[in-house]
Amino acid sequence: MTAADRFRNALVGAVKPWSVSLDHDQVERLVMHYEAMVETNRTHNLTRVTDPEDAAVRLYADSLALLPWLAELGVTVTRLVDVGTGAGFPAFPLAVACPQLTVMALEARRKKVGFLTETAAACGVGNLATRHVRGEDWTGPADFDLVTFKAVAALADCLAV
Image (tube, rainbow, N blue to C red; front, side, top):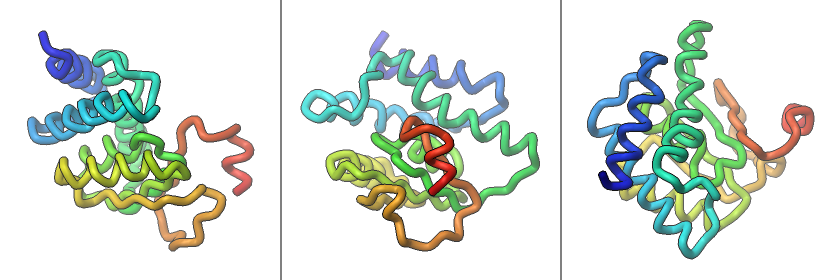
């Protein structure tokens, strides 16, 4: 079984209990992102999580775990900003799973912004925009329904900004 097959199986299995439905095209876009991430990781440190099953669960499914929670709360999100997105988590999986969602991904490291911008274009993910900026320095529009951040700082520090 290839790494892509292992990734696919782990991802679909991880989100199935949450009733998160990904069609074939969405799964393939996530596979493309995963493969690009692993390839780029050989020369640029994007993540330590590269094992197919581990990445599918810890990066991609973890990003999508937000969807059933929002559904349970009855919250509708149309614009999301992801602060400190890194290689694109949770921004990329959410943009793929929810094409009606406008996603802005903020990242301070230029190489990660470049990776995410190129990969989103290659995967045909048009609802994801990137900005090379630290979250606390962002001066763009603040009309987002939801702000996400993962492993950027202590929660109290993130909420204080």
